[in-house]
Image (cartoon, rainbow, N blue to C red; front, side, top):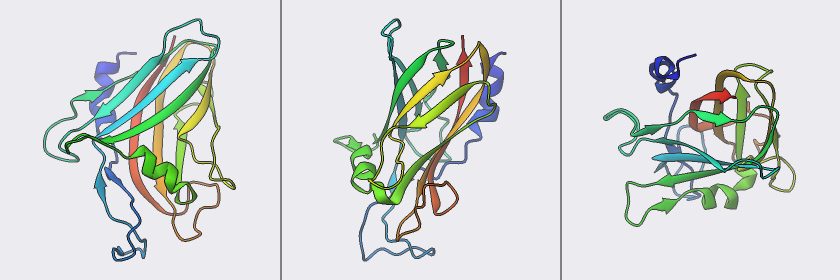
Amino acid sequence: MNFCKLLPVTAVVALCLVSCKKDPSDVDQHNHNHEEELITTFEILFADQSGNSTDVVAKFQDLDGAGGNEPTAFDTIVLNANAIYDAQITLLNEAVDPIENITGEIIEEADEHLFCFQPSSNNLVNISITDSDGAFPLGVDSEWETFDPSSGQITITLRHQPGGEKDGTCEPGATDIEINFPLLIQ
């Protein structure tokens, strides 16, 4: 499958490109207490548990946010078949100086956030979230088990679930960011 042909499809990403920050004086139309911040960069690092291959980094970067210029980076996630990877997500705002690492805020507010992973096919990868807020999964850290060579896509969504909405599922809350990464298992 030619992923260059998929790029226009995957570039139609449902992006809110915002992160949540507690500020009791900011209340949006959904009664969520948060201030919106720009997320310009979504990066995911994969480390092969066996140590047989080098680390893989996949990045989505749109320095001016949704609309405007096209993303400056939109990588395909390329992983080895029949392998297990530890994965870690990093979210940045590179439109400010110094660059802001938004991941720390997500971890700080773990009881209000959840990363959701949806592969386009069950035969691509099995993903297990390996971190939590103490009660429910978070998803900054996860384990990816790949299967036989194949291709598709993986949708990764950060859900903001404040005020007791978080129940371990992706339904409650609002989407902070959603990326449809092309996925190649080789």
